[in-house]
Structures are given as structure tokens and as C-alpha cells.
Amino acid sequence: MPKLVVLTGAGISAESGLKTFRDSNGLWEGYDVSAVATPEGWSKNTALVLDFYNQRRKQALKAVPNQGHLELVKLQSDHEVVILTQNVDNLHERAGSHRVIHLHGSLFKSRSTKNPKLIYNITGDELNIGDHCPLDSQLRPDIVWFGEEVPLIDQAIIEVKTADVFLIIGTSLQVYPAASLIHFVSPDIPKIIVDLNIPTISRQPNLYFFEESATIGVVKAAQLLSRLIN
Image 1 (cartoon, rainbow, N blue to C red):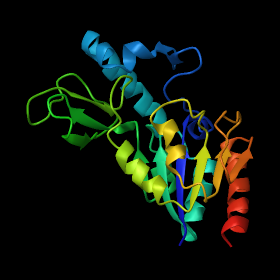
Image 2: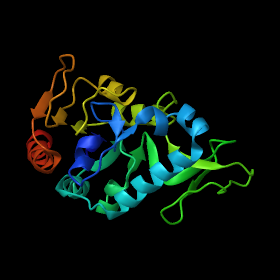
Image 3: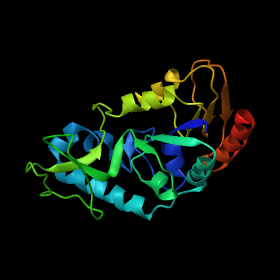
Image 4: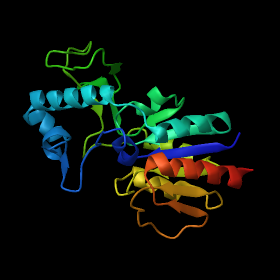
């Protein structure tokens, strides 16, 4: 089966009522991202950061996968689909996608503050002060904050280098290093972008645009895929 690698951003989650990281005004759900999405914010007010992610986690659990998520699941019947998402919710998994790589971490995982390789599933919807790893250190959300490295970016690069089609949904291609992934794709393969605001990128061959929401644009992208692959 042809390999379809999909990069998703906030635009696909927004249609399920979720906002991911920052708006144009630098806020995330009304909070300054420097207070809730940086190592400095964590050190300054751990309780605030934990509460912020507890609220985001509860919000994500109430959200429902939208048609954009579901259309990607349908593509698994004819494609090897790998989703690289910048989103920290679990809507892709709940929709039924099999291979999802969370570049910026997950609301539903925690990690040790002593050893970042110690990662755990969060039971329930809260992570609180006093929740420790076996090393007796406070657990933090397993989220890639601003100023931190993206540990799965090398794996993502390997995936896009072996793609037969690269599909980009709901991202401005402004947040690095995820935005650089398009430059690792073979120039010979189709690259399809679905977003309400088509990002400005350098000229590339085999580039297709759908200036649509995810729920509409992914359907059109799937129709294009059937023509390009068959």
C-alpha cells in the first residue's frame, strides 16, 4: 500500500472545539504561554501549570473527533497512514487512527522531572502535586514546552522521507521544527495542504492546496489522492 504521512496542527482540533498552544495574541485559552508552557513557568508556579493541563485534559475528554479525523481513518483501508501531530489531544486515536506520533507530547501522559525517559499514562483526568515517579520526583505533563527539544522529530523525518504522499492539515507551518518536515519530503511525491489560511512556503513541485476547513478539505484531499495514486 502507498504510504501516506499526515502532519496535523491546531486547525483539525479546533473543529472539535479545542485550541492547541497559542493564538495569534500569544495566549492559550486565555493564559500567557510563558506561564503555562515553558520550563520557567513550571518552576515559578507548578500548581498553576498542573491545574492548567488538568483543565485542558478534561476539555479534551469531552471533545469528539470530527469529520476530518474520521476521513483520515477511512484512508487506512487503502494506505499505510502515519500521523504526525502537533496536537496534544487524543482525538486521532479516539477516531481510530492506528499510527499517531505526538511531536509535542500528550495531555494523557506524564513524565519524571528527574529522568525524561520515564513516561507514564495518566490515570483519570488530573495530575497533581505529590504525584511522583519511582525516583520520588514530581511528575510533569509530558508536553514539549517552548524552549524544549522535540524528541520525536528524528523519527518524524524518517517517516516523511519514506512517504509516497505528504498531507498537511490545519497548520500554519510556522512552528519549528515540525514546519521543516516538508523540506525532507521527496520532490517527486504529491504534497497536499489543507488549511483555512494557506501558509506561505517556498515553491515546491507537486504541491496542491485546499483552502478549506479540515472537515471539508480532508474529503477533497482524499478524492485527489484516489486520482493521484491510482
